[in-house]
Length: 489
Image (cartoon, rainbow, N blue to C red):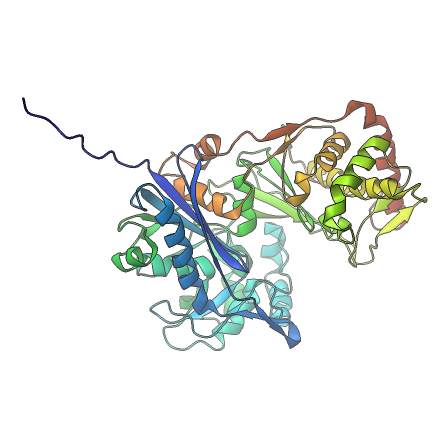
């Protein structure tokens, strides 16, 4: 009798997401169900910050770090990386570098917080005022638009200005790639009209050839070359798809990808982001929108208030303070825990300052008031979005370090009067993996998010505290109006 030998089973198809953050490159490899099978990480040098608001990083370190993180991740996969079918790169918004025709950095990158082009950005705001108004965008001091103009005045023959993913896309494929309309937004691309703000760049004398092609996030930009495969462990022919900015990638990683879905990210500051079918513009400029990969819109706003409210508290003491604050119930005083000068969302005021009204009865009472104050800002943010005609449906997705506090999440749910769904992996790298999966493992981003993002932990409002927190919220809003920071409603 002849015997047969079973052929080796093909590994389950996997996608890889790359997050180029400020301090490190992170890689996540996930399957079609969203199960993370491997991860990788490699450090980056800290940006060098200097006079005049300069903030630079050695862009020559990006590719070696990305390749190292990919090798770590692909080496941990059952198939050694041959199962990876697509990869996408996401990075910080507004970081640019001048590169040679073969994709090599020419000098350091100007980071997202570099302010040397603030004057150019202020001029660009006036030159394209009508366009920015229609788009609902303000060209801020650190916008990449001014940095592109700054580079254009210094670029040599054949040199190009690249966003971080553009440079890594070139390295992965071996040829120039288009930029995505998410990273291009603050560089002067108008996703509403589907064009660069040419009237602005013409006024600055910028050669149109310096402006890259722009395509939607998730678009296939090429495939992994033999050289890149040897450095990363990715297979030759693996699809390279365009990414999004880190903030947008973190949003879709929560599963908030369809119109009406919003996510509250409680990190150092508070950020509210969501999805709408149509572009929403905010006359106050507190809210602005990226373009969704499927053509919808991603409105969002970032507060100067957030987890920073607890910056003076020893982290080791937080669980005990939470327990004491939970036991005592709603605070007896009001706290607007703004630790900076000025507020930018849900209202815009350079004069805003933190305040406490009343005297906390004890430390737990004061702690509880700070947690409630951030929750009040979140409710005000949602109400502002709804006042602009935006539908917010279902539970609010929750992410960020502050969402790990059970007490804080319950307070937020109670103040909002709606459940919060705490995301399990609200990470930029996982969002990048979702973009890699759209059109590869799944028909589109919506289908990918439904299959790959976990339901998360649902936190319901505490009904017995609703009335007290509603009363405190009304007093909080009245205090903001009395100080002239919030318009009368």
